[in-house]
Length: 311
Image (cartoon, rainbow, N blue to C red; front, side):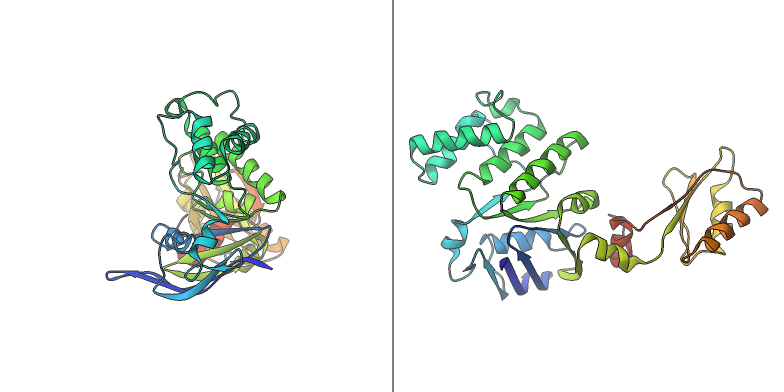
């Protein structure tokens, strides 16, 4: 059973077509990662599904209720965390959660109990009675995620939830999101971090120019890219551009230069023969290498292949 379904969603702003027929389906208790560059339509999709924006065309059902005909019923069953933590800096972490619980009519005691449970779950007990303006970015994001769960919604929308976080804080938030999914919550996650989608998502939809251009599990999308990649780092004093020219003769696609100017990545035909040919070509050209490794295609490769852009 799908917890989120969308068919033919369209939305335009003035002369900009934000969505041009988006179709999505998210089974209950899973994570759909929505990937795409800035301006691809990710946030617009979330806003429509969360009843914050009306589509120009198409239909969507969230938690069994139509977003246009039953917006109030949808709102009762969803949580939403946007790109920036929406917490009141003049309140403590506990006060933020109790306030939301009170607005949701949990009652004073119910709101306090729910706040305490969430503060414990999101490892904020020690900071619970501090003003949130003293919180780190990671702590604010955790509090924001906790706030989206006060009503224990079955469906949660997370719009780029780890933007601006350091790697450690990001990993902590990932674990907490997976904990929610393990408890049965359905998550639609938009992100520009390919690693984030790879770690969290059961399925991924790649959106570009308001259209879903690919959809599948992370492994399915990687298989679409095809062959393995050979990554070569030249030894100090060697010319990476010369290495790229040599490798181009045995590669399936034009070589890609690494940002540090010492690395080259090329996609090779299947088989060890292609690897041996690449090594022999470099040796014959007198180019010494410090690293020579094969790797499977990544989501970064998928993103480049589908959109023609880096993530």
